[in-house]
Image (cartoon, rainbow over the protein chains, first blue to last red):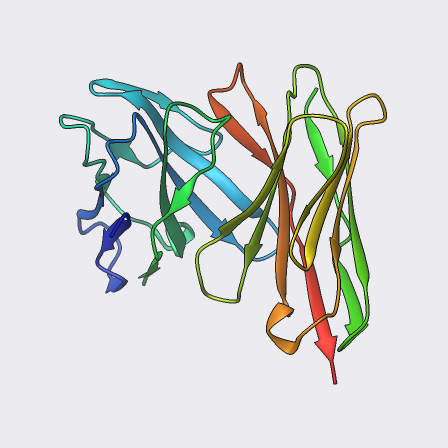
Length: 113
Length: 110
């Protein structure tokens, strides 16, 4: 089944404790992206990747890191999480760029206390 | 600039028709997406209009006018399960990203 998977689905952590949210897609998509979604603010892009080893900042990259060592994986790293990073996070992928249909993972609900 | 505007909330009755509008100011948008998102779930693709006009897909239709920077999503024969947020989005940043509206929360009442 074609899909985007994310892990974990739910995470409660404390300020400053490094964490990684994994994202994997099995559709051989070139483009992958991370979003956060907060009430009243909509979907905001954190980072995106046009291809392996090619990543770029989205609209809200501060406090996050990403890597794209393989085509299928695009982990999101929070080196020192803070409470303002409490959010619902979505990973998405598309065939080639932002102008193609994006397929979303199920989401990761992160709480930082 | 690239901004997308859509109403925050709408309500409708089961069995009725509802139109959700989306307007945008853009340079370089070459199409418009509509996604559906149920509360707490991931957005799912509904439609992508590249050409002007109406595209019908079952109970859902989407319209685009590029010259007016205007699109709408038309939902017919509303069902309770259509209660969701509807997001419009356009390719921006030289097609490197999607520019998202804040979404329209639709409540379908019995």
